[in-house]
Image 1 (cartoon, rainbow, N blue to C red):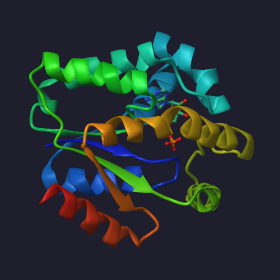
Image 2 (cartoon, protein in one colour):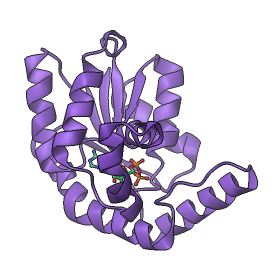
Image 3 (spheres, helix red, strand yellow):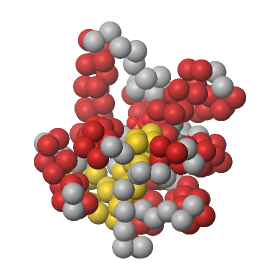
Length: 193
Ligand SMILES: Nc1ncnc2c1ncn2[C@@H]1O[C@H](COP(=O)(O)OP(=O)(O)O)[C@@H](O)[C@H]1O
């Protein structure tokens, strides 16, 4: 199964992706996680991405498309994968289409988690408070200023990606405000699993 999870920061993509990984043995491909790992390791990509990410802006399409192209080519992705945080621009979606076509792969679903923007800031503040309480390091972009930029980037650059897939008849929408288990069930129903 090859899936895309779409939705704004704090919509619950990571939580739902994790559940799909556990239940269906898919590989989770989170460009945010991959970029944070690159920043931590100080790779050339990490050095380029570090400040852009900390500001809450998007890393260039060329960088993330390159990362995903390399990752999808790994043998563990043959069984299936969930893209979480990619594509985030229409240009990335087009690049993904070309990549999949070249590999003879087809998407099984594009699921969008719909959430009221008003609650997202509160969700992320809660996540930060919980991580701090557990003594875990907080993300460099989990502060009010970067969060505002992340939401702006979502509205301006990522929201059109939903339209891109809707126009292909591939988009399924789920209410991301529902309790976590209900969201999981709604996704499963869409996927017929
Ligand atoms: N597909 C992408 N294109 C461009 N930048 C990306 C992409 N995925 C992740 N990033 C960068 O990583 C940051 C964190 O992404 P992510 O972990 O998905 O966070 P969130 O969805 O909570 O904002 C983004 O704000 C952006 O700077």
